Length: 117
Image 1 (cartoon, rainbow, N blue to C red):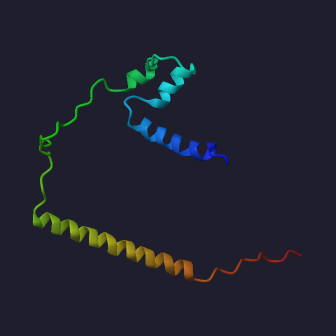
Image 2: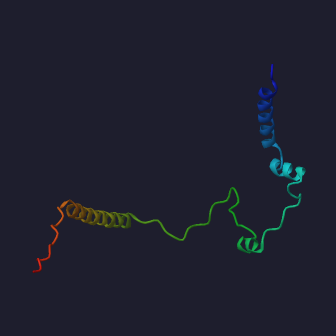
Image 3: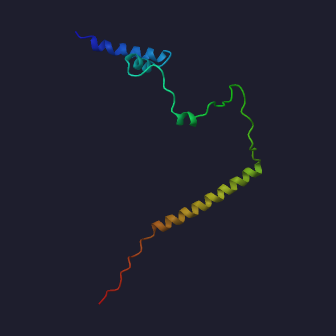
């Protein structure tokens, strides 16, 4: 009775699951241990270090974002914007209807040049 392959799969699965919980990078550790790569990480190339910001300013947890420079529109401005968008929609629908009519019309008969004697 062969139990080797049937037992190997669960053991490898358990090892992979436990490796995911470990601190560090198990793939890198395995590569360093096997001699594929060196243990020390290389410095980033010059163009990478020049293109990345040295520090990133994030809003700390618990603080509100700074106030915005734009103001909320009042009801008159909202109504005006709605009318403008409705007018644009009506114009686009008219253009689409014209395009549909042009596409539905039969093709013109080809022009035949007069016969030359």
